[in-house]
Length: 340
Image (cartoon, rainbow, N blue to C red; front, side):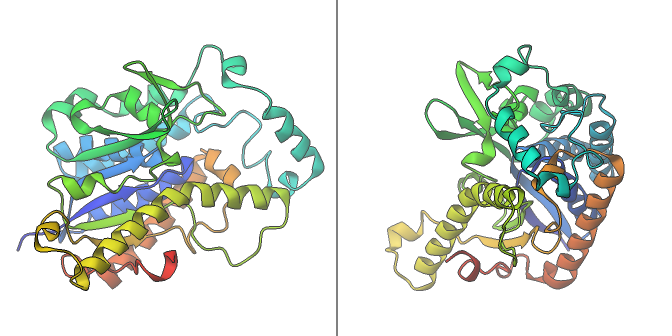
């Protein structure tokens, strides 16, 4: 019996991308599941390109490539690999410090500085890690997997989608370019910032290409938090989550609206032929990453990344037990309730 095919949609979120590593690793172990397309932004784009190139050699190769990539992220000499610097570590940046007036003053002062000033040579160790981890020539020429990564065009406010056939390390760096930390990435005369500002991750390319009808979203920013944020750090963290979730919420609402039109027969015969019925599933950060602050997205300590990997593996295990049988049958993400 042929395995069930899915498209993976990978959200961005700095070092929290190691949670996706754990999810993907567990999914690769499932014989009744095949990852047949990928879309991602920022850290999700990194996982996507590593996974796509690894799958050229099979599932075991892909799992090994992901593990090696995240090990290299942790081993990188510089601490600013995900927008971090030497002092912003788990040890020297505890949450209690972030809630003090002094930290607020430091943040205000830091916000007055541009990466064109404090990083004039535009150094980014993540590029070296990517180029060592991924054979981009093999990815472009030997992989048949549909792969899409998003970046944000700075001058036009448009979301740009790069496809596997064109992707280099530069395109991935564009997808992960946080403008507060790094200079905009230039590609063919256009400047790009992090793709998560407008597509986190981009879902619409999956509608128009030869991809599975099932989309499995792996998010890194919680949609729901039971507590009201009150401290400056908590407010900033929640604002960041809402901002980076907003393009995803908009896309999910659009999918839900089209499904409603299809279900209620509100489309003409000619219109129905232009729309696909997509089945949407999700492994979200809700309840899995709620205890982590925005600052921890810069933490590349190996023990921390390993903890995120284990959380991801458990999340995937729970999803497989509950929802694997629904793949190819029905959506398991309620597109109405969470996003009205």
